[in-house]
Length: 454
Ligand code: PLP
Image (cartoon, rainbow, N blue to C red; front, top):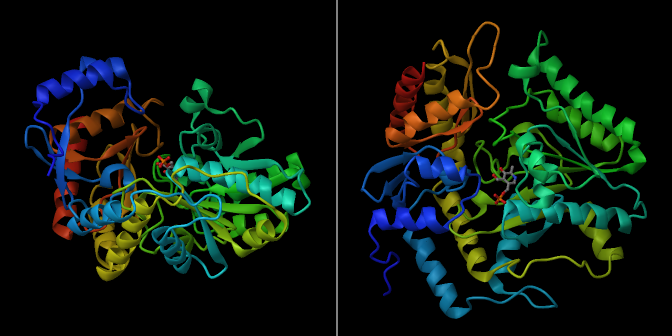
């Protein structure tokens, strides 16, 4: 068999990387000044290994995605078998493949009862592009084409394509020309710790939801087609909404007849201790975005879940939907995603997240709450955050660019552990197979790193 790694030595790889490879979300000059990338060569369970054979505990499951952990031979073997049988065929123009059909049915079986259809894409960003196309197509089919505005939230992350970056509420991305779609508007995020002032979390949840209602009334309900939100804002710093927030959003969307899009790219497939974040927060969407945990990152695949309301309207009245990707429903990615979901079922990874690993993470995070640099710790299931502040009492931040968070993250990196900095908030999202002992190891490193940063 061909070796997956050619015999380039690590120093040569680092040199070639700096010379030729532009990475996503990277300051190229700074990376080169620091001596270039750390090359990850292999992985097993919750551990990565770098080119110098350092064993690194991955507290982020890659990019919040490797839910079943690394080193699953059966996924690799299945991919090989599927490649031999049928490496590619498309799902355009009245053809389909068995893996794409089986996966569509399997995903539909996991979604709420009023969801029976899915549309495949390759990434969360693409699936959110599909959401925009779907929203406009739906309202045209429903005879209300003027419902073209889509409302999102500040500090949201919905991807990096033109639609994803425009839907997202990330200031630095917008500054680089990322908000190119003028029909997208943003409202307040439900970030109680930062924005709640004197309000209780419950009061603040209602106030944050009211900002949606105010925006709908400003734009005119007859012009607003959809609202999009992540159950928990992930890349925005693991912003867990107060319990009052999502029920009020449901009510507002229903009142003004606005489609509710739930972006489950991070929360979906077990992360919050349920199959989907919508179950954890009581969200009642019309459209659902899925990616990451759908295949645990073993191959790129994403999906848009479409409720009966939307699906029946576009099926009945839409004619041809002029939208899709060459690799929509790619047979190898679908076969791997299907098996990935079966592994999650067989090993009860969702239940383990809810009943064992999630509560253990919450308990260990709580031990950090008294640290002078820690403003708040928060978690749901296996997604959590440690928010670093200059002053615990006043909640004063360090600086908006998150230099302190970056310092803390670098301390992690040096100690062979991976945690991410979203501004000055340290976030955690480990593989769902993580054991309590491995969580202990991560939190012990977190303590050391916060001490070293202080
Ligand atoms: N939506 C959410 C909530 C995400 O967190 C992400 C990625 O982190 C995306 C969409 C975009 O997914 P992708 O990077 O696969 O395009």
